[in-house]
Length: 412
Image (cartoon, rainbow, N blue to C red; front, side, top):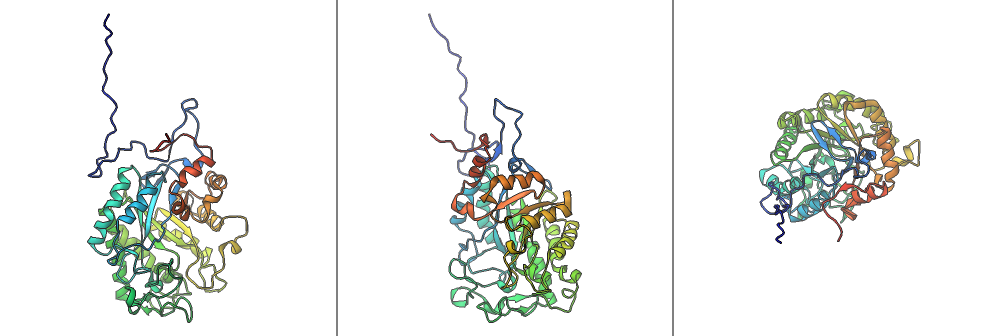
């Protein structure tokens, strides 16, 4: 008796068509919640529900916050290190990876080892990173920045607030700001030269050109850095802006630079499918009456949403050397540093914008998940834990009892 076995084609691991080398196609992004077969109606916890940002959808509410790693070469270009760094995180399931602060102008870097995006060569060195992330069916954004008076510093792993002079590739003679006010009186950073109106217009255009380069090489979103005491933040706050022209004085004048940057980025991108993010310094965390406060932020966010910003990345501090810890300013000292302020912003803007929160959110995933489910904010941006463990999303899933996430890897 002959037994005839029906022969069927074997399953095939299809290659991704995004990159030239072999990597398996990922039809479902890692980090996607899939209900178990025995409970197909099971709902994911808030942190693992998809969210739409403009026309872009991401599979969960855990994002990688932009983190400066001060590892670019002397031309401010990305190296294979950056591909390994971002690629190792992206394959393990965050909803979006935001690439670190990237200078839009030659004088705008935080350090001589920042990434830059003011020329096409710098853009092309970033392309392999974007392509790899897309080959894993994941999303990525880039944070565009001008450091203003805090430019030309040493990488923070060498020194905190130490000037990088010409001997190490710095540019102290080219450091600029809204006003000639140094970050720390008698400190190690230089007193900036006050920007002229024409120079301000040029930097606005630099933001737009960098945004276009970012989109041209495939980034899914662009974040404008308006926090941490860098140039946009410097213009907004009276602590660093004492101009008497159309960019200083009144609240409307001080936010003018920020709005012009947003408008230029939007015009340069010219693509409604690419959302614009803005990192916001919600407060200078200063006791000085001239400092930027939460009430200023509430007015600012109304303006920026009207100009096309779709995600608000809430942070604080960094614009004055003697700022107070955010936790000391919170009404509830048990909260992570920015939860209370993100909650206020979210209640103010409602569904007009996505609100992201930062600051030690990984320490208590159950609490962070409750914040998401209660509508306190929409997206948890986590930074340094991903440096310690690229699989931080997996750890959060485990602590929330999520066992049916889609992973690329399995244990043998």
